[in-house]
Amino acid sequence: QVQLAEAGGGLVQPGGSLRLSCAASGGIFSLNAMGWYRQAPGTQRELVAEITTGGSTYYADSVKGRFTISRDNAKNTVYLQMNGLSPEDTAVYYCVTARTSRLFMSSGNWGQGTQVTVSS
Image (cartoon, rainbow, N blue to C red; front, side, top):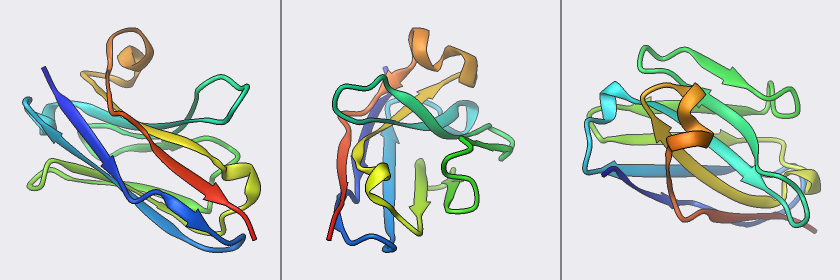
């Protein structure tokens, strides 16, 4: 059973940056796709970005050009660099892993989430 631990959330002003990290343990990290989702109060959890085992990436339209997902297989860690943050980015951010991204929602392993609040 893979376990995930997110870190790096917090309060930031509009236009600011944050870097989230997600450390994995208990599995073979390099064989799994990794993703970041977010959920704001009263909304459904939505995909923010994902990265395959080969390093291919996908971004939601709302974060393209502002967020960057990356992975370090040697450290079993995936990152989400978030720049140009706006209040609309306020949410709990979750890390998820599965053999492929199509399995994220049905059978992925999820972290506990980290709160990101963008406010002046």
